[in-house]
Image (cartoon, one colour):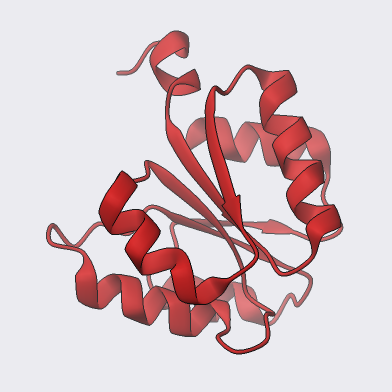
Length: 125
């Protein structure tokens, strides 16, 4: 069992094509005490960033141009050695939740964000 200070040192990557969502999540995580938060608006960078930084959690938007969240998860799955994909998806589409879980996501946060729920789900991951 991890203690709170270990949880707050978790490496987290936020992936969203909307800057406002990234800023909101960065602020939420910062206020909660997380110290290792990175972000990208380019889904094509996710695999390389994860290889380099071995994130403990990736907050992944599903609706993005060039490469959607399902394609990102497929690429990550192909590159993950231990088979564990530390992904929590962000979606406004209720129908995408089950598909995301079947694709390997461990949890999801619905948009628009309920900040208390988002913080709690992130902490639990």
